[in-house]
Length: 169
Image (tube, one colour):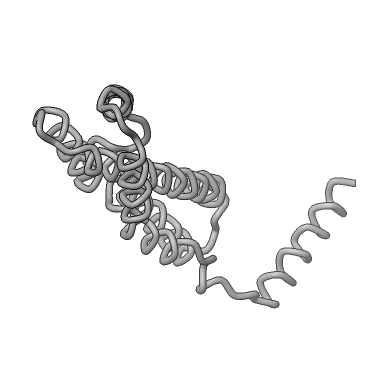
């Protein structure tokens, strides 16, 4: 996808005559890259992949000889990466919220452990690369495989409830 933007930019630059217009475009792209350094959102603090993107952007901004095509590549590459990162983080947070509502009501010990482990793995995934987020989300989205319907337990619960109703009348 980056090469498409580069070709588009090269065609645009070739079609433009005056270098003032190119300087304007360069200033605009540079300003956009600077804005990426000012506003961080989501779980970025310990995210190596995110911090690598930020380091690339800083390096490009500090180097006055960075060409416009590379700045465009950085801009659109980071925007794409960051959008995916934020969507994945929201999906993970939604699953953690689901698990937070399931865990307190979980009576089956194996399922309780299963869901607690899922929640911990997902919270850790928030700080990992996008590919790891996808992987961890897929691994930690299924329902508990240990849950099984026990007819005797169900029958005993019904009997106990029925006896409780009779004694309370």
